[in-house]
Every structure is written in C-alpha cells, then in structure tokens.
Length: 80
Image 1 (spheres, one colour):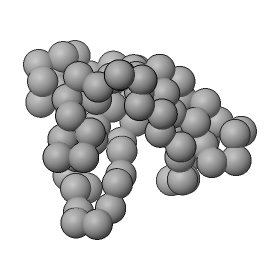
Image 2 (spheres, one colour):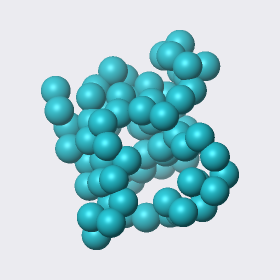
Image 3 (tube, one colour):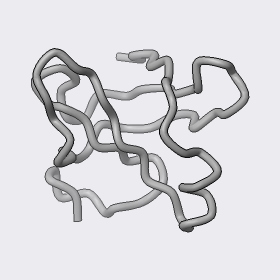
C-alpha cells in the first residue's frame, strides 16, 4: 500500500507532499513528448525527497517498463 492507503498500482505516483498534496490529480508526459504516463494521482512519498527539487516516482507493472521509461525529465500538469 501507499502512504495514503491506496494500492500500489499504475496511476498512483510518489511525490513530495509538501510540493504536490496527496490526492492531487496529475497528467505526466516526458519533456520530449515521446513517453506519456498519463493521468495519475499523488498517492505516495518516495525516498527521493530532497530540498529544491521536484521529483516524482511513477509506478510501472514490469521491470521492462521501468527500464524503457528510465530516468527522465517530465512535464507535470496539475488537473485540480
């Protein structure tokens, strides 16, 4: 389960809740537009939280999907 009690699944991402409150609806796409994670909800906190940084951690179903996405810059649209 995530920090908010939701199941760990595609569409639930980890955020710094001081920057993006839990429950916020988001849309995530890579900066180059080649990769679209899509609609998601801020549901967890990752161990990556650092000062002066806005990092998210997205959930994928397989290791192969994780490697394909990799570590990349993203554009985050806040929907609510």
